[in-house]
Image: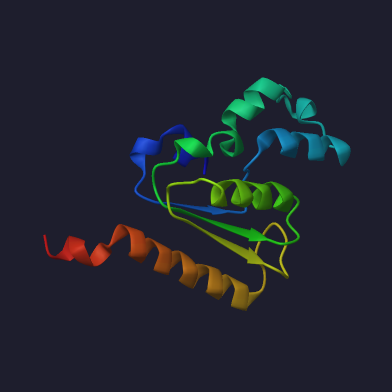
Length: 135
């Protein structure tokens, strides 16, 4: 999603799968869990993290996109909040899939299959690959 917000003119569609939506909130969660980004040489700079976070720049997205998230993902609150914002005014088509029995990564085979099928259907819908064959 960072690419869609940072370089919107480069993408025809995008899919966000358990990726960072709000780097600032992620840094705060890591700190609360006992992890310090500064220990890894990464400065926790609020302004920088917000500038890099797709969460604060969704209005820049120009291409259809999909978000897939596990319900138990540590960042689910950010994803749900983002979806509420998007439903309130996003002009670009988007789809949101939430997997009730998953965390940060999809582990269950049926969920992986469902997620993969949804991605392919989304890309076919918006990229129209059959129209490329006719050229």
